[in-house]
Length: 248
Image 1 (cartoon, rainbow, N blue to C red):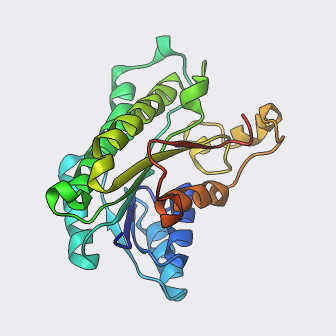
Image 2: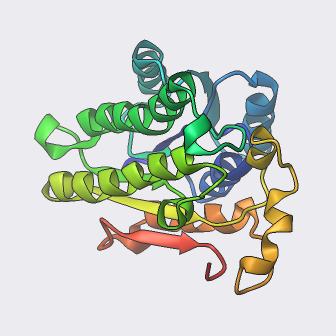
C-alpha cells in the first residue's frame, strides 16, 4: 500500500491524533482542515520536527469542488494516495427533532454524510485496481451514537453516523476485490472539542458514569484503532466496526 494518507478534519481532536501516530508509522500525512489553518500547521510542524512528512490542505468536505481540489493537491505533493480517514464532521446544539430546522439537517448531512461519500469516491478512483491503482485502505469515523440514537440531544448527528455505518458496509463489499479495505471506528464519549460545538464542553465527563469503564476516552485511544485499521496488520479486515467506547 502506498504510504500516502489523507485525514479530513485533522487539525484537532481525533484527526490530529491519528495524523501524529500515522506519521510515526511512516505515512506521509495530508492534514485537512476547514478553517483553522494555525491548528493544522501546528500538526504539520510537529510531524516534520519528528522527521516525518506532512502537508496541510484546506477544504470544506461539504463542497465537492473543494474536495476535488484537495485531492489534486495531495496528488501533486505526495503522489498516489494509499489511505483515507473520513474524520471531518460536525455536531450542532442540543435539540429535539421537533425543533430541528431544514438548514440544520442540510448542514449535518452535507458534511457528515455527503462529504464522506465524495472523499471516498475520490479515494477509490485513485486506489482501486479497477482504475489502475494499487489498493489502499479507508477508515470512516462513525460514532457510538449510531447505535444509541442520542435522543433529546443529537438525533440528527446519530442518524448521520448511522448512514456512515451503512456506507461502510456497502463500500467495503463493493471494492473488496479491488484492493481496498473499508472499515469504521465508533468512538464513544471522547475528550475532544466537539462537545463544545454542541454547547456542552463538559458533556463527556458528565456522562462518564454511563460508561462501563467509568471514564471518558482520549483522542489518542481512538487514533490507535484508526491507524491499526489502516495498517497491514489489519490486512484481512474489511467491513468491520471497531467500537472505542469503554463498553458503552
